[in-house]
Length: 215
Ligand code: AP5
Image (tube, rainbow, N blue to C red; front, side):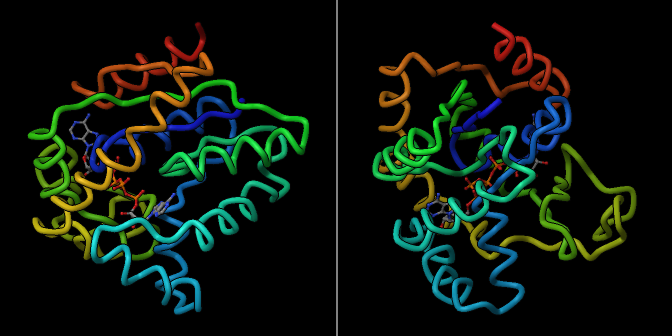
């Protein structure tokens, strides 16, 4: 299956993607995680992306589309993938369509995680990420690690993302409304959109998502 996950910052895309990708046996491809890996490795791409991320702005399409395409062309993604955080504007959605059409492929579904703004602000404020593997995500209240500040999965140090400050989160939400929300209509018009509520326990949302994708 080829699936796109959409939703505001802090909706739980990364959290759900980890479970959905495992259930569906497809790789989880997060452009945010790819950028963060580049930043921690000090690559040129990471250096260019960091200023945009810290400001809560989208990284320019000419950097993002090529990076996402390279990742989707890796052998493990040949049979399908779950995209988290890409596409994030209509130009990226069109580039993805073009890429898939050129390869004789198509998307199966676009899963939209719906959650109100107050809740995403709470989720982001308490989020802690593992320094060794940014796919290991915790929350100080909702998904607390057994030992404060230490990753349950690999014992890496937990930290708060630079772009999770209050001012940056406000801008990320604004960018989501103005630049990313238009892709919801774009995919609705293609008959691909599946919307579910992202409120409730993590496992309940995973079940909701799996049921919706089966339809
Ligand atoms: P990215 O990393 O993609 O960030 P985001 O979309 O803002 O999403 P988040 O990672 O903040 O949230 P999430 O929905 O994954 O929530 P999570 O599961 O962690 O992008 C970061 C930046 O990179 C962008 O701002 C941009 O600059 C750049 N970028 C990335 N892709 C780009 C692109 N395509 N084009 C241009 N620029 C791009 O959950 C959040 C918290 O809530 C966690 O603590 C979790 O434990 C908790 N939680 C999860 N589910 C629940 C639940 N059901 N109940 C209670 N708590 C929950």
